[in-house]
Length: 217
Image 1 (tube, rainbow, N blue to C red):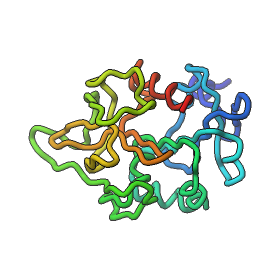
Image 2 (image 1 turned 90 degrees about the vertical axis):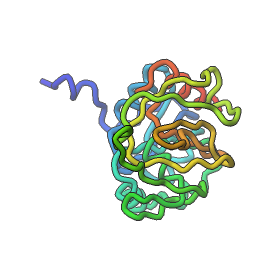
Image 3 (image 1 turned 180 degrees about the vertical axis):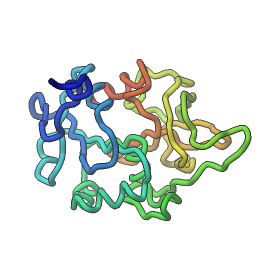
């Protein structure tokens, strides 16, 4: 008899793609993706999994998930052999949490060089009595550019964050800004690459709106 947990978790070997053109989730062993896939299923957004370079052709958009240590995540991503293909992508690509940090050039976490797709750095929050690290919980985000990724999401909306490292604020690449002791980029964008530091799959109505928007970009 399967436990409730087993019933809810699909095997990553199963690709529940509902027809060509959905979202390809890049698998590289860096974090639990089941809350993300549950949100996509709830929204009726077709998705599947990318394990090899050939898999990229099956999808029109991509998500790079990730939780934990950026340096370790980058090492796992390198081990897949997918880094050159990722850097060459021309279709919409969304990095979530550590997946967003991987898009940057460098992280203080593990003194790590990353994908260097968006030329900004990932830095550690300073410890203080007022702002405990990690930054955990709901925080407001404020748009700095118009972009279809945040259509129908009001300025000041709350999203759910869990992170000790932040992406430095640079007006050239910041879509959304947030503040936690210092201003940082809650979302970044360059060409077809997007990143969000928060977890849209855990952020209620506006998180679902963001995922729906991404599925239409």
